[in-house]
Image (cartoon, rainbow, N blue to C red; front, side, top):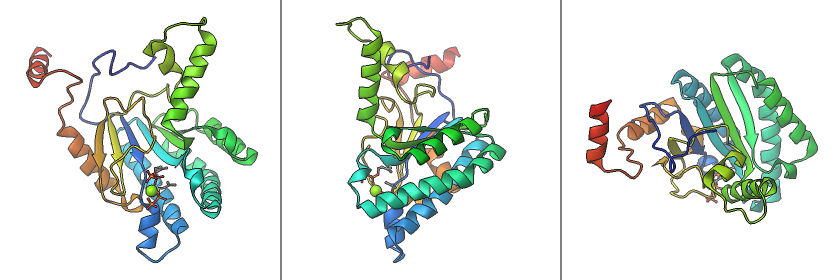
Length: 251
Ligand code: IPE
Ligand code: IPE
Ligand code: MG
């Protein structure tokens, strides 16, 4: 089981082991160029490819990307269906490249709302990439932090005797991303400073980084800037600075 930042003090290193990103600003990137919003989403797929590669070369082990939220169904039907098509073609095109780069793909979220063909495609891509070990790439699709916590609680309730008082250890293993450590670094592109129902449980002690750069423009240099900001943070996990100095002396 992965360790919990509220139960134990995590070991940290200069390179984040898990980076989680809200890829925002595709629509505005396109609109500012007088292009249809979908052109921004298409360009956003290219940015995903670049950032995944950059994570491999920086030895970041986990990259988690918010691609479609449980609230994004509220968008115009045409945009939603174009996003689904784009997801499907990206899966088709990228799987071989992921195998060549050593990327393992997982898709988390309530996938039951996607059409059967897309669900099969996701399952196949996960299967095809399952032995790759350079980067764990997770795409959050029809994902919501509240959905995740609720489905984990329901699963925990199903395996516990009635009226059990749950601990973190009962819930956490049922979260959709239980295979990954909690994110060290959260990045949101596109200028907004909110969580938008992303990883509500796992972000408890994650360092937050916001940038105005639109997702299609977010490249390896932009990622490095976020990592530098991360390296300047003092991750105290509830302790004081003086305690951290003692810990460093002792190690
Ligand atoms: C993020 O970009 C991608 C998705 C939510 C699918 P947006 O589409 O939200 O772009 P903006 O925020 O409208 O610019
Ligand atoms: C968050 O972006 C979801 C994804 C990037 C998939 P949104 O653009 O949907 O978020 P809000 O609506 O501005 O909060
Ligand atoms: Mg947006």
